Amino acid sequence: MKNGKKKITYLEMITQFLLRKIKTNKDYQNAVNRYEYLTDNYQDTKELNDYLDVLAMLIDEYENEKFPIADADPIEVLKYLMKEKNIKQTQLAKVFGSQSIVSEVLSKKRGLTLKYIYNMAVMFNVKPQVFV
Image 1 (cartoon, helix red, strand yellow):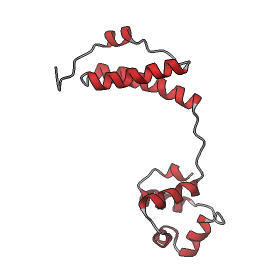
Image 2 (tube, rainbow, N blue to C red; image 1 turned 135 degrees about the vertical axis):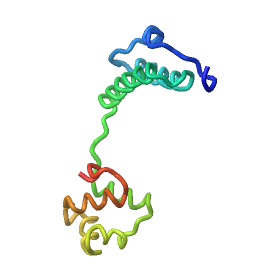
Image 3 (cartoon, one colour; image 1 turned 120 degrees about the vertical axis):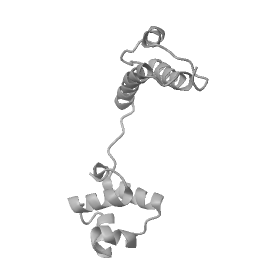
Image 4 (cartoon, one colour; image 1 turned 45 degrees about the vertical axis):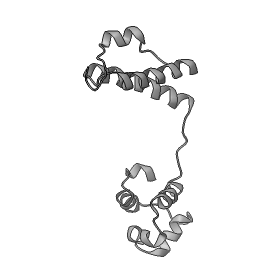
């Protein structure tokens, strides 16, 4: 036992909880519980990680199907990040070139260019896709 955790084989995992498409909320809850149980109680091994990768994909597929998340408005994302990181409009002037452009972008009177998107991604340390 390593770190007080037991080893489990791939065969034991699939025998105890077969990997298959999640179709009901009960299946979903069982899959989430199984994932948490395995990560909490068993040693980190290649076999465990392979099993958990597939289980996570099945869980993710069900969540995306049953609980879709609408795309966020890029300007609302920008406002949220500004609030979270305590960034003022004046600080964004470096990204946009001037305070007036910042105001126009935040009020949706001016669109985002690739240059603005890239600079914001760097400033906020996020992927550029966040602002698309």
